[in-house]
Structure formats: structure tokens, C-alpha cells
Length: 254
Image 1 (cartoon, rainbow, N blue to C red):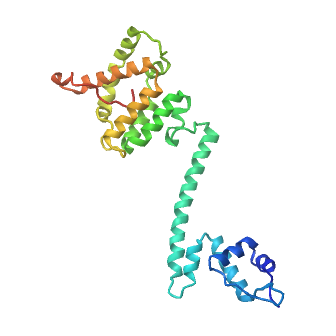
Image 2 (image 1 turned 180 degrees about the vertical axis):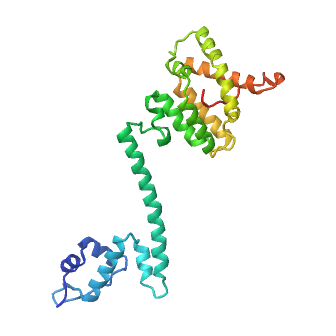
Image 3 (image 1 turned 90 degrees about the vertical axis):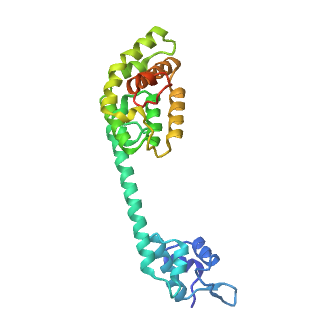
């Protein structure tokens, strides 16, 4: 007595659609039909279908399962490759779980890298957006330094974040000049600030352009004016006297 398609699927723990699909892709042989036209599956079909189901449950792809049926196929290679893939996936999922835990327990924002989460919790949306851009263009070492700077955030940075767009020229100039000793110390502690995008994974020129566009788009006119003056201060602090009129420098952390 043969098995119907439904009986075969139920015994193998799969679905009618899966059985039909395995027929379509050539993984499961078509059975003979009875005199009334119904398919009659045998134990051989059942064993093959259980094997396919087992391998699919282990995460083996259909193409690999098809190759496994060849005499010359090394099953160990496929399983080893699959194990390596799972190691990578598990590590990725564990990292995601760790980040989700921080978001839930520490109420950190989701729009910044996890290592900046607690630091940026009370930052303005524009500041967090700039961190996101920097996280894609700064080198790993420079990102660590940026995190250190943000941990030791200077009160002037809060003033800059709160600066209204219609701030007067005198206010802008005064705030920028008050930044001078701050930037002098930062340049001493982090010399790379004079050329922040050297070694950038995105390339120095593109990174400079992206951060410049981000600052222009995310900051209001008065904040942009202060930032430009701070860039000139950086230039003055890092250049020879004869070079100070050559133009603006790049700066991160202002």
C-alpha cells in the first residue's frame, strides 16, 4: 500500500507545498500513480523527505542538499561551512541583543552607535546625527578619541547647541573666541584633529565633504558661523605664522 501526498507530508513533518516544491526542483523523485491516478509514495520517498527536512532544519540550503546526494560530495565540508556561518550569525545576534539590552535598560537613543549611547542620551538630535556620520568616516582610533571628548564634554558645546539661528555677530565671535583655549588643549591631547580624516575608511576627501555637508545641514546659520570660526582657530593653532591665511582647516569635536 502506497502513501498519499498528504500522508507523506504529515509523516515527514512538512507541508504539501514543500513536497511539491521538492518535486519541482528535482530533489524528490516523482512516485508511480495508481490506476485511479493518485500518487503512491513508498518508504524510499519518506526516508528521502525526512532527510531533506532534517537538513533544512539544520539550516542547510537546498542547493547543498542536492549536492549531498552525489557520491563524490564531502558532507563534512558542507557541515563545517554551515557551522562557521552559524558562529558568525550567533556572534552578530549576541551583539544585537547586547545593544537592545542597553536601549531598554539604559534608555539610550537608537540613532547612535551603541558605544556612544549613554553619552549621547541627552544630546540634541542634530548632535546625534553628526555622531552617526562621524561613526562612518573616522578611523577606529579617532572614534575612540571622539568618545573620550564627548565624555568630557565642555560647557561651551552646550552653549553652541543652544545657540539660536538669529544670534548676532558679536555673540558668534565671542563664543568662537571662548573656544580658543578649549581647542588649543584638544589639539594638544588629540593632534589628529588638525587632519581628522587621514586614514578614514571612506577616504579623506569624501569624508571631509560628508562631514562638512552634515554640519551645514544639521546646524543653524549661527552655529555654522561659529563652527567656521573655530576651524580658523584650529588653522591658526596648527599652522606657521606665514601659513595662517591659506584657508580653513577641518575639525571634528567642535
